[in-house]
Length: 110
Image 1 (tube, helix red, strand yellow):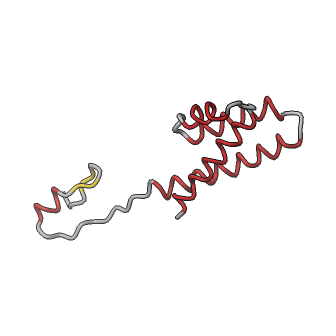
Image 2 (tube, one colour; image 1 turned 45 degrees about the vertical axis):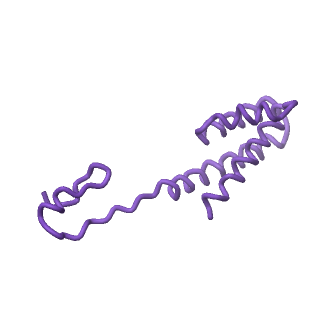
């Protein structure tokens, strides 16, 4: 559920960026922003746009606080999305366990 909800975070960040750069039409900015795959890079883009647009307003501090919260949430999201459970295989035979590998790591006793 958490992973599927993350798309709404990305969507809202795209809309915020579009508003900050005052894009008309917003579809072009949305396409450009969405072409960036790294979430932290997207946050930096929003930060730069907010600095130029909002730096002398109370909204800039609020934008910085949101960015800090999103950085923490992104770390948690990445832990969930990239979680891998490694488990030692049951020993069916000595040769089988020596040859069983996960991500290049031998789990056998050899």
